[in-house]
Length: 128
Image (cartoon, rainbow, N blue to C red):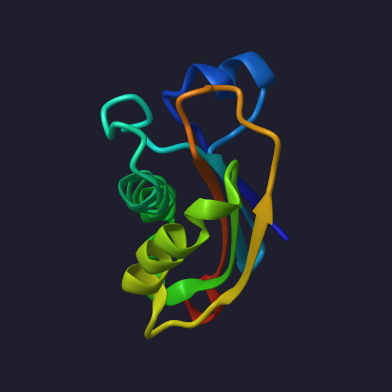
């Protein structure tokens, strides 16, 4: 089984010694992704979720994958009140795909402006 890594321009990946996405066999894993609009969205959980999910989907592109290949999502939120807005953003991107999904309430994120962080797992099956 081959392992491929897709680096990211994020300072976190360099500081932590991690990759944005790793393909191992037929699975492609996308690590914790914060919204690119953490400060610019004015604290809007829906916009932050759309941004984080879109950023995470972008990490699948080097492997030739998109939303239809996603089999699992994890969404971490810092306020329970944001669950509906974050869920709405998830539904807009994955409603037809219907991946296994986990939504977890956490104490916070490394960037205190962020309200949500996401992870994805995709299956590339016949694409390998």
